[in-house]
Length: 236
Image (cartoon, rainbow, N blue to C red; front, side, top):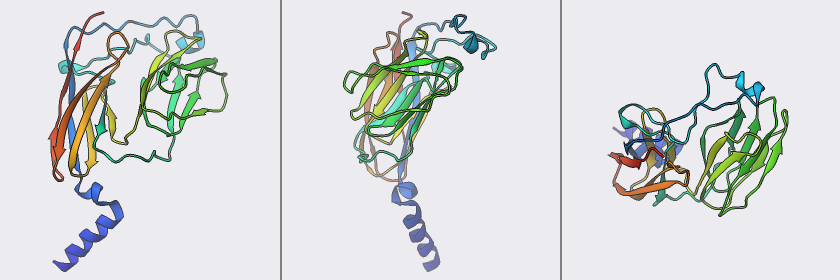
């Protein structure tokens, strides 16, 4: 028994109490209504990008999956977590095939962002920030990464002034607890110490302005709580 207690204590020192005993919040994000249809993107004006795609790239404003799953939803702890410090590692936002990869990139306030151009053509990255400062920078092929960071939480729409079909989002959050849904609409927020949390789900929406939904949940130990979200979509 003493040996086992020593091992548990040692493990707690190595990985931290939040990793050993933290709770988890998970769930699915779905939709009701009729979502806007995805449309093929015509990249014929940029042949170097068009030839990278065996089939046409589809618009990503509303992406859905089986069983009414909703993709590209940012789910995060908006209140209750002590997340003052930004991670040291940079977040990467890649331009490849005249697409933004990923479509929605999440980062902590103050965390370094590296914007890469892996195409044979120039891009013009234009984050349409309203709370933070707006900027507009050109990036020719072969250029080093554009490095920047954001001071305030904000969902920032991003476009390319050269290729109007390129569209994405910077989700700047004051938390390290976040996830982005993909094919099945599922998300997981692990390693949460006991406490009361507000969970927010954000989706860019049909009109692109963004919509948020919130729920409160309490974690008392290393349990898993389920929090599901649903967005009402319109075909326009």
